[in-house]
Length: 157
Image (tube, rainbow, N blue to C red; front, side, top):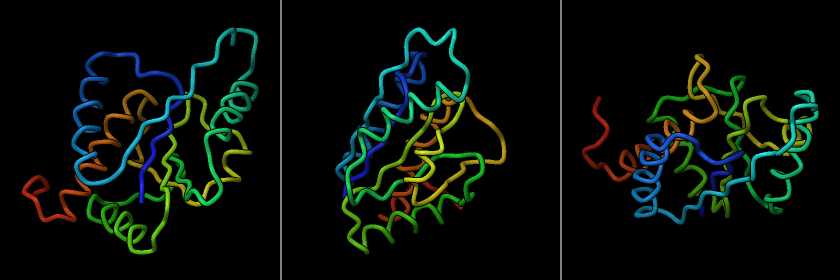
């Protein structure tokens, strides 16, 4: 199995990017992992939120392949503990899921077309975080999940 993380636009703040790179490198010790960055839309001043979501959605959908198991990071998704999330990853490895694709949308969320391709909605919290901040939080959780699966001393209970 491989894990892909699709992101809308580049991470803007250097401190977030440094943390993301740190965890991306750690994740790659456990599994084939890649980050796919959808270019930020330009000239959006005259576009409404729905039009922006539609255009971002088209770019996101262009990166998906048949057979991808698509997970949207969405505020309406299922909330899991770190241990439950590690079990979720293990389940997909056991089922021989070829590609597990997690998607972090832009600031306005996802288009209906993207929702229709989703196999699962996952929320990291009942709180709302910026789409920039959630990137770091989520890659840390992927890394944490693998340390749990390998019984490594990173996660404490």
